[in-house]
Image 1 (tube, one colour):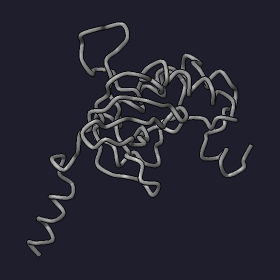
Image 2: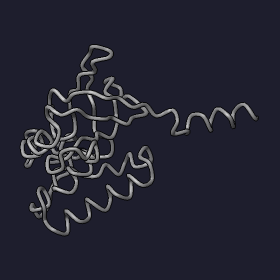
Image 3: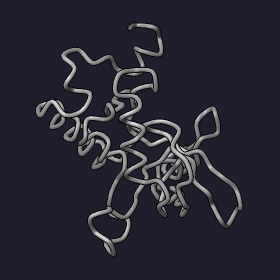
Length: 169
C-alpha cells in the first residue's frame, strides 16, 4: 500500500517536469513548433499544451500559424513539459522573450498569447494535464478574447478544430 502511494506521489510531482532550452526553427500550425536542441543535436516537435488551434484549411488557420510564428520563430525558447503524445511530440508550455521587452527573459507564454489574440481554443478536454494556475489563466484568456470578438471569435459560430477534424464543418 505504501509503495503505491509513494509511486503516485512521485508521478504527480512537478519535480518530474522537464525543461528544454531550444531555438524555434519552424511553425507547423498555430499550436505546433519545431525546436532545435543543441545539446542533443536534434530537432524536437513541440505541441503547445492547453490549446488547440484551427487547422490550416480551417478559417483562421493560416492567421493562427502566422501569429505563433510572429511570437516565437527564430527565438530561444524554454519548454516546460511532462509528457510526449503518441506522435512523440513534446507537450509543453512554450516561453519566449516578448518582442516588446528585450532583456525581460522568457516571460511570454506562447499558448496564452495565442488564446488572448483569439487564435486558438483552450483545450478544456486536457485541462487536467495543466497546472492549476495555467488552466485558470488559459480559460480567462479565452473568455476575454471571446468577449472582445478577437480573432476566430469574430465568426458568429466558430468551429472548434476537434469538430473540424471529425468532419463537422
